[in-house]
Image (cartoon, rainbow, N blue to C red; front, side, top):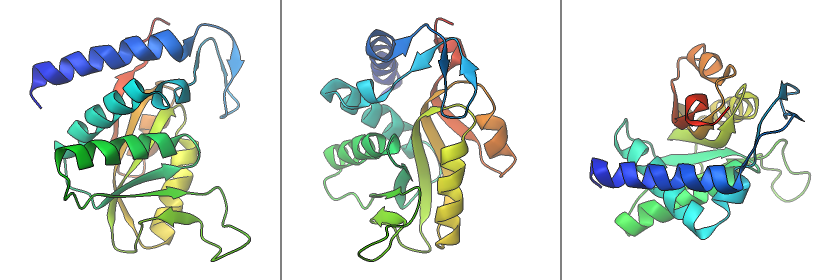
Length: 188
């Protein structure tokens, strides 16, 4: 897709995020930090237009960098993001080899007792996806789980980086955080 087309999609996604996912109010985040704004990106990623825009934009970022075998992330927030990217990949290339998976907070206590579900296999090069990044804590947990299972995390992408330490946490692990939007894109 051409750059002007991506710019239009990016503008549409930001408009959707600000319209349905952004609230200017005091909240406590999952990291335990206090914030004067809240982002619930599931209200964006679980809408048809949100799925389309997130999928197209994150896929474009993925295609512009080092190749990966699979995309995944920590439940729950990463699941619609992974699904959006896989749907966009299939739309552009019905024969795509890109696979998806998700990481549970802990291994299941029944069945095969898996912590990583989906099309993950040891040896894969993967990109971890997330909706919103604050400290990066849950995605760092996913990174550790994937690494322990024999995968190689090559990339980390998110929709919004709140600018509160996640980029630095991934840099300390040798990874750049690639975000569609940062704090400067938000009216905070």
